[in-house]
Length: 202
Length: 284
Image 1 (spheres, chains in turn orange, brown):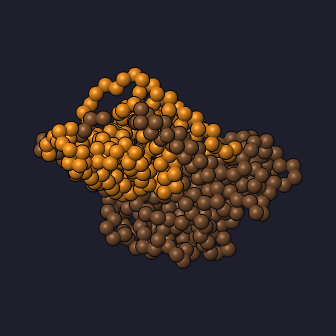
Image 2 (tube, one colour):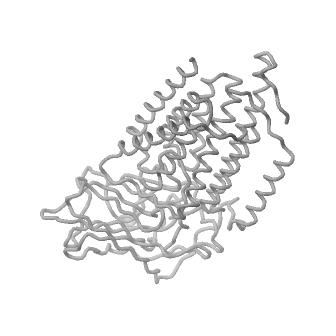
């Protein structure tokens, strides 16, 4: 695979050139989610190792899709953390008077934090990073927002069940909004990491 | 400017969908959106060979002043949980505290007609401070959650009463491996798998403990203080009847060594890095 200078082509030609990589990243994500589901279903690996494998695979997809590492600015990070905090607060406010379902973690804290951060960041680098760019190049930002939000909901179904789809679709839209506003995956990644890490205490 | 307008719309729509989803279809608890959930291996009361025993019970006393209770067995995450508000219970006059007990018991001799018991059968009971049984108020419901053993593709929560199993409406709980149901009574409950299911990792056909149905035991000492106790349940001393067929087609009977899997993945990742170069996406 080689670089494709889209800016030197006509819009139609650019869209056609971007369609292949867009589809390739979707297929790669689907494959990785399927493998994760198989690992999860059979109990082949413990949770931390499974998360590590899944996270590394996501980073690999993002890298192969052309996302190069860079140091994010402070603004997107702090805004993302604020958005993540808002999501946690909303979740707490939505709780009824009954005690919530108990979900203890059978893992040491630090490895869990590391792997959770890796998985959340990996999902954002793929969805709001690589896939967003290729999809937007083919069909525009609105399509990228919709497609990545739907995918965000779908990739969680195998492990968490279909009941999480409405919530995760809404969160996908919110993360997409952050991505659009700040022009990169740093803000949604910060929000996603914070919301996921909060589950240790909630 | 157009991009910021779309971003603002997405942020607002996202928040609205999140609020509506959490009000109309709450997932019941963490995780909020996703995350890495690390589970203890499933612990069996009567483990098939090669699988872990040591299923635990729990007993918790709460004063009636509280709004409700959520009690789960000590495994991480709990293998069985019950959540209820006190208004759903038929509390006798003078009740000052309720004691909730969840105890794995040997599976009844009768198997469900529509499948096989998957994992432990749990006896869930609530008593008052004198040990008198408390039932669910007519027309009310309580929530139960059960964690499935590994490799169970689907399951239904069923209750065992009057010598027969009855399925109840079962849904995924929104967290990995958990199933939930709202039920009108306490009693004996278990996850029931499709016929032919057997747990992955079992070396030989799993044993199904067969005992006569037991009478629920009273667990609450008089004037028990608010406390939580948990202890491994004793293994059944009854003969086992290994009748469940072994292994779903295509289901591994044991996972490959983790080291081999990790090495294989590292080789694949290294090959990908060596042979593939990243494609350059358009800039924002």
